[in-house]
Length: 141
Image (cartoon, rainbow, N blue to C red; front, side, top):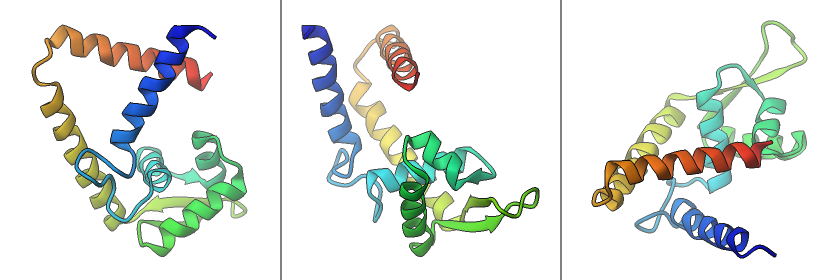
């Protein structure tokens, strides 16, 4: 196995540790697991998102996405509605509580990341951003 690929994998696991449920200071997303938070975030960023769309965006089956959506609905972060275009399709919307959670969590985590990267040169931050975007694009293919 290529040593660089192994190093990238290990580094990604370490980064995920800080952005997972543990978060920078012991928590990530209030009462949400990371998968619940990512579902909420994807729904927040994509209006009129169906459960099938959520499954596709997160690489889950429709039934897996349904279970996550059910948990988020029961916690008050999402609502389900029938599509006005096709009544067979169930669309998911973010509630006010969900919007508050997204804004609070992303704001807090972004501020913490900015604090941790503050001593890096702006060009280095640009390189990190570009490298992560390139990696994500390659993984999503």
